[in-house]
Amino acid sequence: MTVNTHERILKAPLAKVGELIDRLASPDDPFWPHDRWPAMKFNGPLGVGVVGGHGPIRYFVEDYSPGRSVCFRFTAPQGFFGTHAFEADELSPGTVRLRHIIEMDLIGPARFSWPAVFEPLHDALLEDALDRAEAFVSNQPVHQREWPLKVKLMRGALDKGRKVFSVLKKK
Picture 1: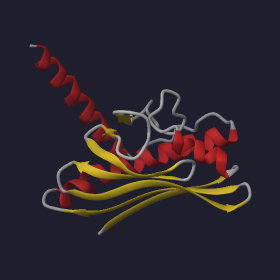
Picture 2: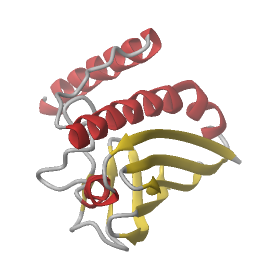
Picture 3: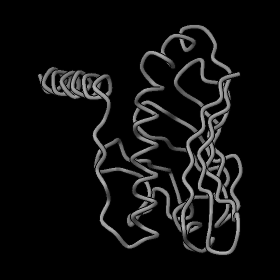
Picture 4: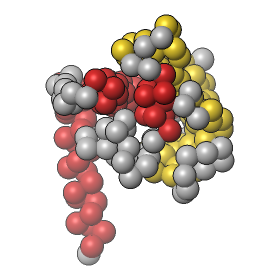
């Protein structure tokens, strides 16, 4: 079982942090770092059963507790069997832990693609999202962190590949 966790302690009421979960993939989503990463999109409003994803990662909403948590079940890439979830837990009045957890089994080539490609990109994306969450609850500008060199190189290669593919697609 592969487990990957990212969390941030936020000085804000649970209702304010819960908004971040409830507004995922909405037109005014303040949480997902869609300015730096593929947007999270669904085939309808956030709720149990909606289907969507971001980039090559596909999933559906398996469980949703408004203002508290949302759990997604992976449907792609091939070999990703499990879930990823956002949870807001009130630690004390005005202090909330916002957490993202992946729990999945990796089958076949995914045993290699997750640690080599997906995990470093995922880690950078989640830290960007948590930076946005912190900015949202504190009414401060978003801190744009610098990505690790490996992430910069992979993003550059992916962007170049997309450009080549779009040119070939037009021909």
